[in-house]
Length: 363
Image 1 (cartoon, one colour):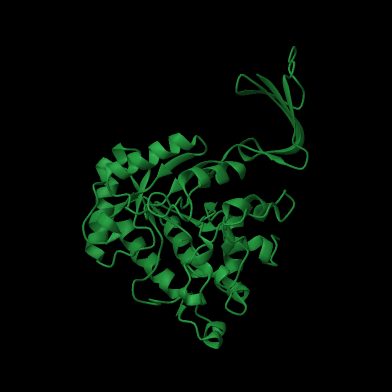
Image 2: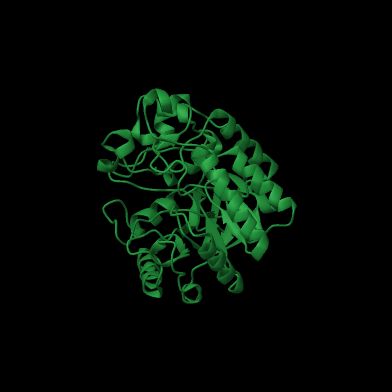
């Protein structure tokens, strides 16, 4: 079929394109931009006025909840949300139930994704069995089934020797180790950023040092083992500066942050609003500014949604008793565009939209 997509804002960073032009497709391939090629007769015309026309987005952290927490979301529902928001590939962390630490779970996820026939799903395998931080997972088998990296999700590996051996094993397989840095003891049990506000609210807190200390530990092992390490959901300026310095020394490290950390601060919690309970917590204005500047400089390699759908009951409790995480696939593009793109509120039950409730806008 010949398709003409008209009046859309074409954005293609690889070709330095950002302009309102028509796009012409024939037999599933782009054949022209701007003017139709000779002899082209459109069988279908799509009016993309007010919309972005881009290559498919890839999200590096989308919690699909299936298997194990289908009451929050399924592979079918969340990949449909991803496609509706422009994401054609999503990366699934290993903290499903059961954990993605066996080939059977990977096979199940691929099967359900194929049935859903929406976004492509690429899973991360578990770094340690059960994410318990004690016994290494069968990384070779997980890679053979299609895992693109390994991670312990939000669970820290407290035994430094186990972490070193895991990184060495991953290096032999050319697998990237994904780390969500959090010191196992500093700030344990906390639910918001350590600040005068946390003291005033009486909530247990997590200092930014909890993130920076774990980044420093992992970086030392990274430089000793030569492992490719990706730090996910960086929330503090100090942690980002450590990563940048290590990269300048030749360490094979990259980093991302969630789009919400460029928009929100701890002050948005207001009076115990559980919709803003996330891990790592939203930091102060100084950290948010550092992340924004780091993104502009290229020190932040990627922005992700860190999409974590919840049922309403998960947020219907006192702040520290609620489950952390927010639904962000629905509003990711609008966050980047600062409200210029079309924005729809999530359907009932699809989670909490911070852009509907929040007041911050993209600079």
